[in-house]
Amino acid sequence: MNMPGKQRGAALMMVLLIVSIMVVLAVGLIDGVRYSSQRLLNQRLMDQGYWYALGGERIAVFALEDAADDAVTALNQDWARKDIVFPIEGGSIAGLVSDEQACFNLNSLYRAEPATGAADDVTGAEQVFTALLENLEISAQRAEFIIGRTQDWIDEDFSPEGIYGAEDLSYTALDYPYLPPNSLLDSVSEMGLYAEFEEDEQKRIEPYVCALPEVNTAINVNTLTADKAALLAAAIANVLSVEEVNAVLESRPENGWADTASFVTALNLPTGEVLPAKLLQGIGVKSHYFKGLADVFYEQRQMRLFSRVVLKNGKAVVYGREYGEVF
Image 1 (tube, one colour):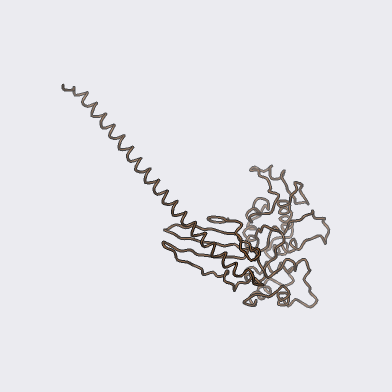
Image 2 (cartoon, one colour):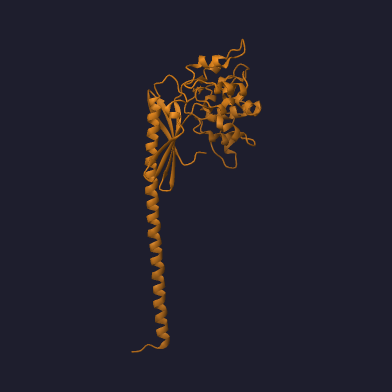
């Protein structure tokens, strides 16, 4: 039985519509499978890159443990090499270890008791930080402000201290409210939450500071590079100019100074000039905190692993990891 022309046309249209729908579904299914396969491939390659990065971390740990028993930590040791690249199938692993005690530890500003305001109630860390900012052409008033904000940020109580102190009420009243941790800084970037930086202050300060997980750490004069002369000058209360301190660093023995006394002798201070004991306590020749970078290039992909390491009883212990770029 023949169908009328209009019915045959409608049937043809239905067939074409069904075929079109099937084609669209097939293309969508194929694209979904392709995207899923690519995603799984990317995940597998990134996972492999991560394991290669952990391998690079272990190499850094071994290098640090080799120097753990040395009397000093210096830049002539194997961990401090800057040309470490290991070839791997499909790419390479580049490694770099830096001394985290070649900086000013912001957590050293911690005070167990609030400042009394007396002229002699200034800690060594406060004196060094103020002198550092002076060398960076940042005013003493700004230094006092940042010190006060830092101390309130990391102390355990909830009461603002001093004229620049700030606690919960100050930060929860902001357009985007948050609470201070009332514990030691984990990252230098936290300064951006409380220091109220002006212009390029943060950019100038950050290369000289760090945030270590303890309060009493010394600046290692054996691993400070010449570009950190402003920090070392501050560590000795600016009794020598930055240029003079830079010259001292340039003439540093290849294996570093054997002890703090040798470093002080090398300063050749003016007659009668003596460094206060509270400043000498903040200077050392041995480091325990380091940061390692494993930069993996694998199958056209990059994985960066930053590892924070502490030396304890001759062993290097990884206590923190960060991935990608660190801000």
